[in-house]
Amino acid sequence: MADEIADGPMPDFISLPGLFVKQQRPRPKGGLRGALYKLTGGAWNLGPGPKQRQEDELARRISRQLQGSYNTAVLSLKGGIGKTSTTVGVGLTLAAYRGDAPCAIDANPDSGDLVERALGEGIYQQASPRTITDLLENIESIDSLTALARYMHHAGRLHLIAGEQDPEVSDSLTAEEYLRIRKLISSYYSVALTDCGTGVTHNAMSGILQSADNLVIAAGYAVSGAKRARSTLQWLASHGYEDLARNAIVVITDKDEVSSRVDKDAIEEHLAGICRELIAVPHDRGVADGDLVTLDVLKPETRRAYREIAAAIVDGYR
Image (tube, one colour):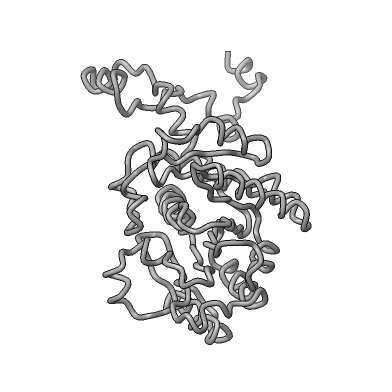
């Protein structure tokens, strides 16, 4: 008997541990399956249902470990259609699911309000007025994340660089200056979102597009909004950014609750097929009022849409 054991193949406990450990189903978190699991003390585990499996898959995609630093530009041809609220909502979602904190940069030349939307105007006004201009003036002396943090604001785990509020200098950010900031950020953050101004021709835009790994195009539920989004993609494709246009994520935000006045299906059909993904954000007063954006007060459907956008963004990082 001992000779047979000695002569037989030895099990590989190190490289194949799963052979010797009974696989357990994931624990259901809600619904009838979750209730049954609790009532039986875990004896009856039917595993997660379809909805939970979908949510778990979204979480897996958002939290995927990345090698290197990536940047997503969020832009539109018109203001007031959800560009900044999308940046904040998706940024907070990335911060909630990823192990590494994301960074959001306000590169809007028209006195952008990214930080106000993430912190609330009252809190932002009480904070020290650190902006992208201050960061540029001192960028040569920044050699650590601690030093960089002095020029940033924090909404939980979402780190933010505020846009310039002085109208005399707010339009002065150049492509070269943006690229310097992007290079600095890439040393400390694996995911960055850049909230752009409206349009694609202002000073910093060539630097933003040059350094972007993918794009989010904000659009509204209106015929004009759909046309502008399509025009943006066509302009990108005809100016050397074919890959960015092809892999863009178009986000349609129902800011004005237009469902009774606009054929949403026709607008979505108009935009589908010219981008990698089309995602709709439902009407939500927590987004539409133009004030503080926090995930806790948003509708479940809105939070789900931001998770879908965040997952699509990370999917595009290759």
